[in-house]
Image (cartoon, rainbow, N blue to C red; front, side, top):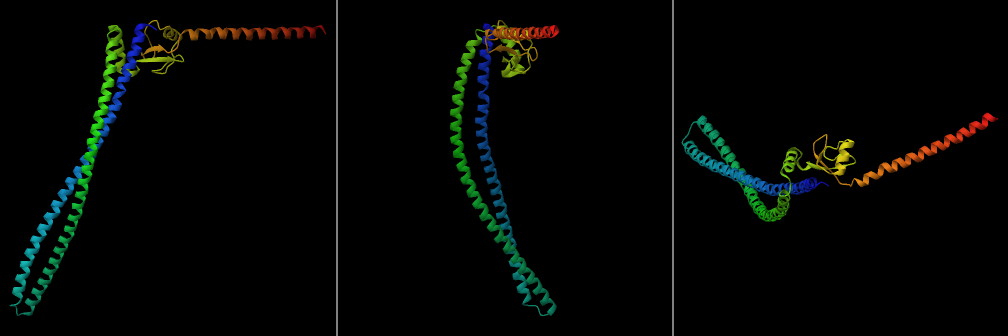
Length: 274
């Protein structure tokens, strides 16, 4: 294989290895972000619960104020009713007193309902605190694992970059520029093998001339369809023997056919003689 082509094949493999770490890094970071997101959701739910408790407690406070006002009003009604003598006034006062008692009962029911709601929400708040503490502990552990995994990946990438730098120092600059130009759009398929006379980048069959050039590997050859750099994973010697086998087989078939013709001719002669 041409030395420049061999260098590009090795460079492409190194670039592929380096880029293969990106999905791993993204997956690790995604897991970390997912955990942070779940904690943020719990914190937000806690904030909403705290706000609801504050609103309920404000309602309870306001209801207590209304009860106190209603109580004072009932005292005045009771004091006034003792001095009344007319039946209509007494009936009106009694009606007013009944409505006042009903209102007090309704206000007390509101307080009882809201106080129970506060108890429930405070229990929810306690549970949320436990979940947040547990999630934070898991996050800390995950952060340590993430840091360890990323460090391991970084060390592996450093070794690959070291190999890449050593290789780049040997590659012809024009050849490198040509490779980088293709890699801009082809990414890690800038250099691909040719198998069964097809480019393994676009999977199109190449013509015989290109096929032969790639097999010889004497120069850098590109796919006539997509422009990717092609190389062969097999030796050209392995292909040369195939036409010879085909010719021998063809010769045997011809010989068989010829023999058959002679036999037929003999049979025809005998019939004519008769």
